Image (cartoon, rainbow, N blue to C red):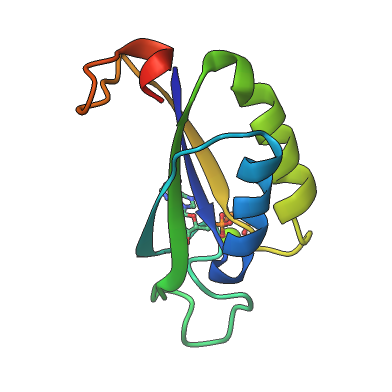
Length: 112
Ligand SMILES: Nc1ncnc2c1ncn2[C@@H]1O[C@H](COP(=O)(O)OP(=O)(O)OP(=O)(O)O)[C@@H](O)[C@H]1O
Ligand SMILES: [Mg+2]
């Protein structure tokens, strides 16, 4: 299993939900986060702001998926969520050791 941590523009959440629907992925969690990437939170560099950092509101969407689902998920994220402008976000991918559904005790892929 993999955990996919996707930082997106808040207005892209509905598109993200459609991606999960298309792939029949059933679980997700969403948090509000603040952050910056390469541009330090500025879309343009003005004199005087060069050394300060601005935090931009984003959503962090976390989804744990089967290994076999990862490639399609990444493809759809790229094709549906890219606007081509800076700040589109980023995906971090982690190995997941195991999972368990508390109600039934199922583990592994069956727990997702
Ligand atoms: N290296 C990183 N570590 C942790 N969080 C990051 C990192 N890079 C980006 N983020 C998070 O992702 C959000 C969006 O980043 P962003 O898309 O601007 O990345 P970027 O590397 O600047 O790419 P781009 O040049 O396309 O803007 C940031 O606001 C921050 O929350
Ligand atoms: Mg950026």
